[in-house]
Length: 339
Image: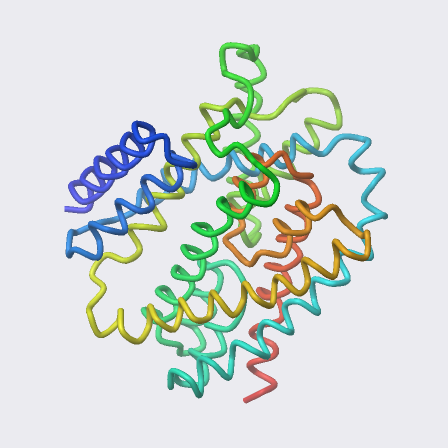
């Protein structure tokens, strides 16, 4: 049954990508699968993401980030300290404005409201929230809606403010890369993921490959980023996973939970705008880099957009890693103290 649902979901995602390509709509391999899977899920179709196969393709993003870490990028890290100091303030601000909205505005219980307010990774928050007694279904829909809203909005803002070509190839074609390079990238992705998972690292599918690819990049083994075809495949699986999360949603959940996620997403975008303007206006970072670093979307989704936009990938990824790490490590401690 799971295999049948997954094959059906993959077919719908392919149809979405093909439709967006035919109509020349932006980010066809990301937004096409996402919106068509979302439409079918809301229509009552039985949808399901690709599980570990989908996670395996996310490792490509970790490799792309790690391959961007060169000796020059490492030398520039101390200069990021001032920008990184904004991240804990950002996380605290989001939590302080989002928690009352979830608790008083939509009436969720205290634990569920707390984990809905945390701007962290979906999977990590689901694990911690379930252990703390939160409503997992509400958590899943609120955070999926936040990511859906931000990922849908961000590409059009990139095109509007920075004239980013959303139909451009996100890298060199695979035919231009030596087979050995692609082999090393595949090795870094799968081996890095496996090692990080064994060590219990949060975000193992991105962090592990990133660290291993960075080591191979700094030693000259990997000399470029993954080819466009690999990035497109990763976008495809991410878009499909986001849209399929709405499978089985009821009208009652749409009226209350998805609305809560939508309002929360708009609120978080407004908070993000304050930090983006503060960081860019003070000259700490370029406006494009600040925009992608302080948008509270999914870690993988933001890396995809950074690659497409040609942003400073190391800068963007480091900010999202710090954000997710703060939420993952501090959220259970703060909730325990509050109790």
